[in-house]
Amino acid sequence: MPRIPGEGCVGYLIGESGTHKTGTAILLALDAIETEGARVLYIAAEGALGVEKVRVPAARKARGMSLEILDAHWRVESETFNLLSETDRADLIAAYREFAPDMVIVDVMTLVAPGADINT
Image 1 (tube, rainbow, N blue to C red):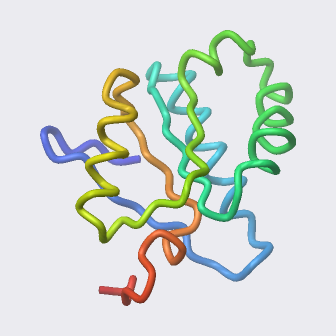
Image 2: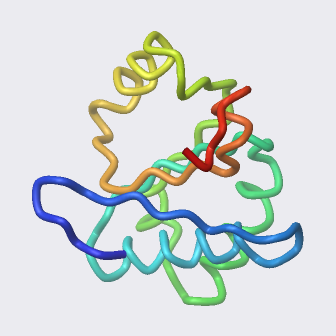
């Protein structure tokens, strides 16, 4: 991910179903944890079960990452969240203020921005 001091950055993984977008996002997040000590908030808008119980544990084991490191640097939010709602954004920020994520992954954007044209 590019570094933009004081600004952060936004990136999108775009592709058809089955093109490994979620796996790539998890890979980028685990890389950031290992190389930068990043704290990652993963917003699982499609549901967290497969991410938490299958995908992340498999990726963690494949790279030899300890469960302690993952637990200290990874959170999953699976509650309904509307990015366009000021209240929802404030609630999310309050809920994760102490964790203070360096990276937020939204999987998938269309489910957290209902009715919005995500291309704009």
